[in-house]
Image (cartoon, rainbow, N blue to C red; front, side, top):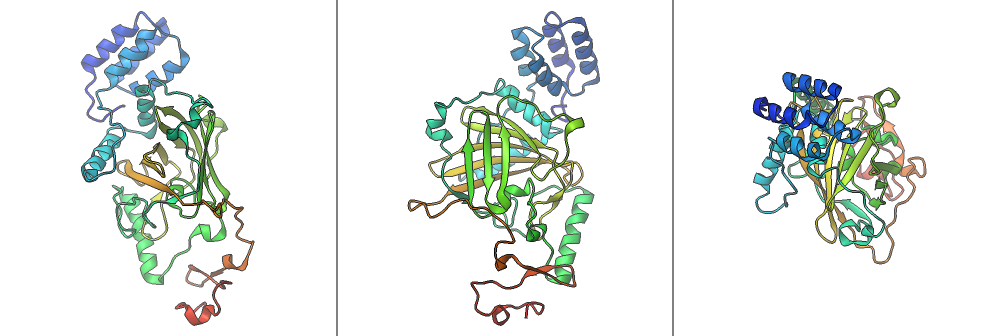
Length: 362
């Protein structure tokens, strides 16, 4: 389904008659059945575009008719951001799944485009340099404090968040899996600090976070997702995408459960999927629309605008280095009796016990 209040009657008839001379009998039967049941129309068109069984008219007319939903393009983060953000949130909510949203954007871009090596020299595609997250701290939505959330949570999602809040209030801390050098996972990936690097090629774009050598590969060579029978969950999942003008649009699935950040930020399940639109908005800033879908924890998809700023590096001092939690004593973790953890002994602090407020460290 494209939208929850979608009224299909007239549109369905127009779609049916526009395709009946372009498809074989089985395709028509499938299409009529899908129209009758008002089910997964947009996804079906997206799949059929790749099959190329039908005439050119179907590439434009039915897709346009299915766009009962208004397309929302890139909106600048300016003095009207509160209203613009609400519009982008509502846009995400009009889709029942991340895949529906991604297929809609793909159809809107007429399949997207594949970059050439020559185009990579243009300013819009020059993502070179060393970046860090622009703001947000420990909040997945960088517009609000880390103690709050703009996510519309299910009862299960709200209960999970409350358990985290209760644990922190009871113990004064929490255990974070990245303390053991485990990958943060996605979509938490977007909130991690430290240094980032972004590498664009015609077939792939690499989104690199130096922490735990964390690389997301976005395949833009036209491939589909790994087949479900061959896929398994991983920290960063499987990501495919396409370019639309100067925006990189992507869809990620097959992810592991995790948390958007430590503290009171919500959790996400292994059913989470993410749609993103990345764009270089000025000479030093990358921004990205994020729509997160998770039927377990989110009652509605969660929209946020993420951002990364290129750092001044004229002396080339900053660089992405190999990350290993065992490389020095600054990563040694004390697991405490209450289930939380604490760093033990920093080599850049003369007397850890003298400055620590933690009885376990003293």
